[in-house]
Amino acid sequence: MFQRFSTGYSLAKQSWAVLKAEKQLIVFPILSGICCLMVMASFAIPLFLAGGGAELMADVEQDAKVGEENPMQNALYLGVLFLFYFVNYFVVVFFNSALVACAIKRFYGGKPTIGEGLKASMNRLPQIAGWALVSASVGLVLRLIESRSEKLGAIVSSLLGMAWAALTYFVVPVLVVEKVGPIKAIKRSGVILKESWGESMGAHFGIGFIIFLFMLPGIGLIVGGGLLLATVPALGVALIVIGVIFLLVVSLVSSAVSAISQAAVYLYGANGEAPDGFEADSLGAAFAPR
Image 1 (tube, rainbow, N blue to C red):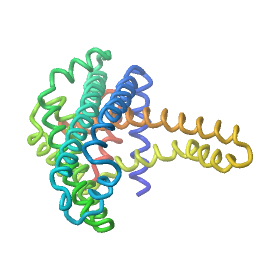
Image 2 (cartoon, rainbow, N blue to C red):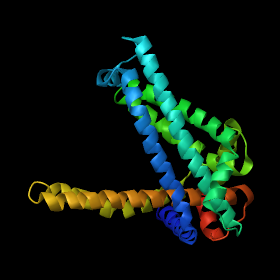
Image 3 (cartoon, one colour):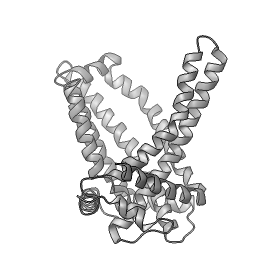
């Protein structure tokens, strides 16, 4: 376990070095976050109206059979929810694809620009839209499973979600490099995962653990600010605001670092060569044997 976290730290460090050399890559997570907020805002009112308010939200989450009390209303709600998932996934995948395209160009000695990344994503709109459609469908199915039972449904949904995330871990790099459709991308991702990482994703979780450690100061500021609200309100609010900003910055950086490391591991798994800026030993250690 320690070796896996060590590998994750090494990959995160090398990915961070790439991000420092190509600081403009941080723009993609920022644009993705802004667009996702805009999507959420644009769907909030129609989703609420289509669902009939908070009561329908509770019905969808708690009913053993979704729509048994008001099938038409719940069907409309689920339709709007699916559309929200689709647009949200499309935005996230679009900007992740742009970041991965730029990172891969950097790996081969090029000097990527924001415009080139966006152009790469535009050239892959059919693949991105197809993958967003598949992701939205799976997301809605998992939501329905979760709504069947408050506890068991949540557990089953979480387990299936984890398996799906592992299976599709390399989908975005595959879409960018191989320009295939979503089904072929899933199969290709599964093949790389099976042949290379086997049953372990130690490096992935290692990077996640490192990111969590960097988030702890921000979490501490928020908790401390909350404790001070009753006695020193001004200081408490200030600490909470600083903590939130800190977590936001860490989230943006971690998103870029994760995408860069994902692209590097994919290239190593696909052709066995370490990209520029990464050590073969670190990448090789990321591919735990089955």
